Image (cartoon, rainbow, N blue to C red; front, side, top):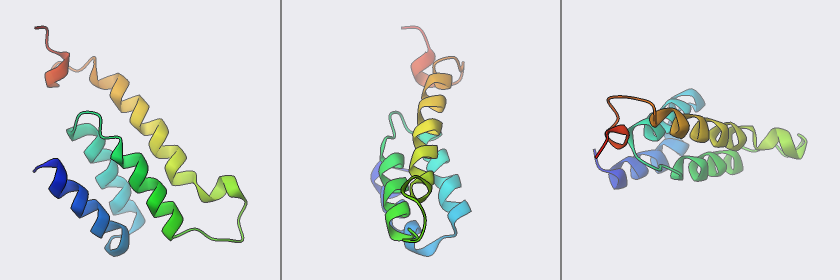
Length: 90
């Protein structure tokens, strides 16, 4: 699946899927694609669409903050995986 089609799926998914399906798709995108920083953008968009105005500011952007943490963790772990293409010696 190309990255463009996956991004279209995520845009539609913001409005059509449950939050846990979107979370799974965002994490899967981070694992499958190199430098998939769009996951943080889609998490921010998800937070902006479904934000509750009665909460404090930091509670509203919990999905964005968690995607930032997951993104940097997965990107650092990818370097040590044997089956990931970028970890192979050249």
